[in-house]
Image (tube, rainbow, N blue to C red; front, side):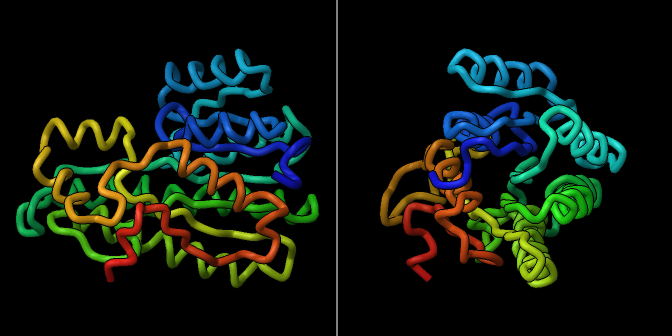
Length: 253
């Protein structure tokens, strides 16, 4: 992809799933990548996989609920590679699928701290650095749940709607200053998070794909390809866009 080789950036939640696939794809395209995750073992494993393939990556342990951690993540990216050209703010969690009336305040608080405020904290630290270096590209991970409604997923759903709104507003603020900000909105992707849901609520997960146009789970690499493309020069006139990567789910609405 045009404009990725020779760049440097970071991916949060890169210790597994979509984040790992995206970090590996950036490295395969010739970028230097900071692998950020609260999971130290998973993060180091991602770095090892990148290095085994001939890429350049560094692990930075990062909790996106901690502002000082996020600040350090960005600082270490610049200290290590001299620049911050792209960022994929991907760290997020799911929750048990239960009716709204049975959900707890702790569930809401944890989802908002990680899924929404975590993205905001990253943007807050990434954007000033990109402005100093003449611009960049950012992709936030929302979800197809951020484009519609879901049964028994109100706190998760609302955080992902929030990521779309945050993405669009930030894109408006900084589009004229050389920073493009988009979101990817994956459908049901075969990740550790979805596999965990399959164990606890298999009927709910299967219901998500029954009757859908492509009638299958997506793969992390399919999201990674779109994410890296959005950060590339091939997507140079795209900003403020929530890109559905959902096997056609949104086409039903």
